[in-house]
Image 1: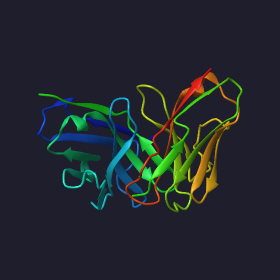
Image 2: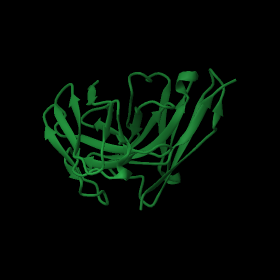
Image 3: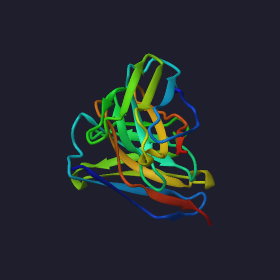
Image 4: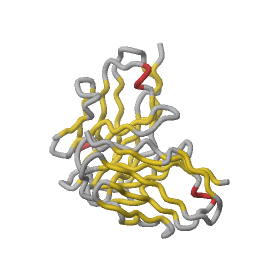
Length: 118
Length: 107
């Protein structure tokens, strides 16, 4: 059964870069049917789609974050990563990784909390 | 971006009630719509994909319907465990936008 596990620093300073990794198990990270995504949720608020990557390296990002965000994939290590630079308090959120298939929607990890504070 | 307008934002209903949440897309999404349930402190869980397909393991009291711009999630007979926040999401085109959520409370 597919499992996704997020990891990364829980605390980052304003103006710095946060890097998160999603490790995939119980399934292949390769395959043309899948998109590997990041989604976030500020405390007490709704869900915000950040972007996704395919195993080929093709990416798509939210226009609201384009220029600050990058998603990369390492198929040999069965993981993909999110980098978000110049963070502010508005970037504090629960960050989820998820696998998307057009035919079955999104399957989510449990999430990791990122706090932005000096 | 495709905007997803979800209503109502909060809903209070009794055990056994039939409950409907609606979601309207700002343009055609060709039924590429999912519904999720999220409980406090937990990740969202997929209920419905492709507008009306029930995810494996999800109780049959949940159903999805609709086409074109307007979609609905219906719970046929509300149970205590259904207290949660529900989100719709379109995945016709990136960015895969979400509705603002509906918080369902049990009376």
